Picture 1 (tube, chains in turn purple, blue):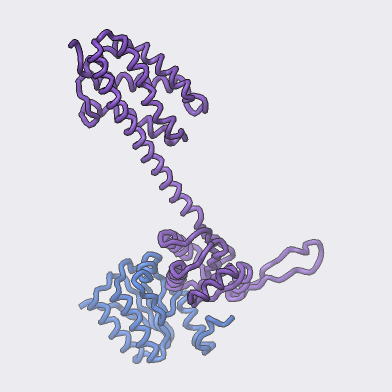
Picture 2 (cartoon, chains in turn green, yellow; picture 1 turned 135 degrees about the vertical axis):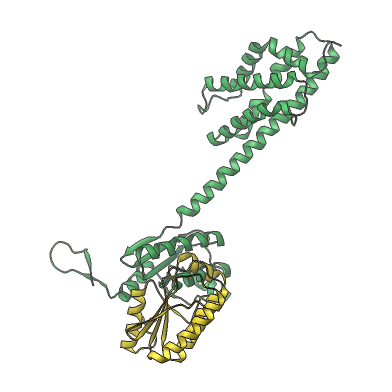
Length: 295
Length: 128
């Protein structure tokens, strides 16, 4: 019984490192790791060598559980690799294959190691367990990184889709796109109130053309926004309620005790009138479609 | 005990709240203001809360109370200079101060009171 623990495996891998690496690389290449062009061969090779090296060091301590301290560096490297894969847009399979494809070359060198068959079987089993754990760990990190990406994108979408536009001196417009949940209402409200202060606006037009549905909750959110604007001394006009939505609101018994206009243009006209301004057409010469505001 | 100064500005009274309001101060203000409205025969009350950072339901109710009392004495209350964060807090507390007029700053608040006095139209805000 020459060797049944993992430190002897480390020895075997150390003796045949170049061979394992070459075989592993060719397997990775077969699996199509380089086809998409998202990673260069040299980079992949560096990652593979680094991983193998760290794994060998961890194995040499004889520890066989992933939670043991010697595996910390291995896990750290794997997390890094996995995270970068997630960001680069690799598929889960491609990411996991990086670890799982190491099995074949390792078993290969084990078979040729000259240990007695029983020891080889034992070691093969231990290696399988270990590499499976590492593979799962990789997937876990990959998944977590993807989730982070999703959360960040959600936040960005929320910010992107709640602009506050200045239409005229003292008139703001808030074109709302997408569903209005409480979190977005908060962002909308903050943006709007901040802009009211900055622009010294008197009227804010909330345009809900892009809001797909208005239920009681959405209506409540809208009313909250209107109330907050009023507290800041600005009036709100709601515009762009689509026919179906208007019907739904009446059926639901939702009442918005706010001035509402069918279109943003109507709301803008009302806002101008409130500020004692008007859009008049200019008759003479070439500039026929030109409009001008007179105060 | 500290008291919040009340300044006479034409036919209106100006109250600038520059310290954190605690409840006793708020009650005192309510009392003082009522007396001053009668004393000066004021037609408007401007409450500037631009430096007020913290509000609670008590302060919100105080503002509502002042407005109600002033209305009885024929004076219009205008709360001016509310900060965005304060506005959000009040709305979340469910206090939208429906009885109070609001304006962005003292200047606009003053203009609002003057307009009300001149036109003598009770509610020209919602005329189409």
